[in-house]
Length: 79
Figure (cartoon, one colour):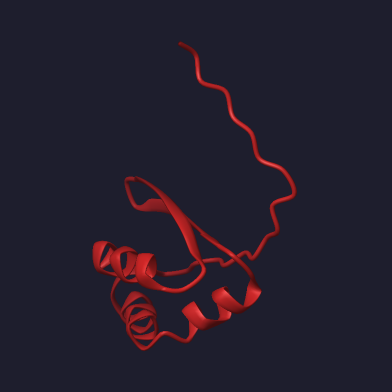
């Protein structure tokens, strides 16, 4: 389901990217969007809603959603 949702999100207007990490039973997925309206539109996507429903019923005991605004981003990578 995660691959299906990521593929669908990539086609959604306003989608900028996604990062995901899993370790054992814990994981985090961060999706990046152009603006708050794009996030709202994604939240109401019918396939995404069905995935959320299945997640609550089958995979997750709990989860958190945080909507944040990135003011600045930079990185370092050793040669």
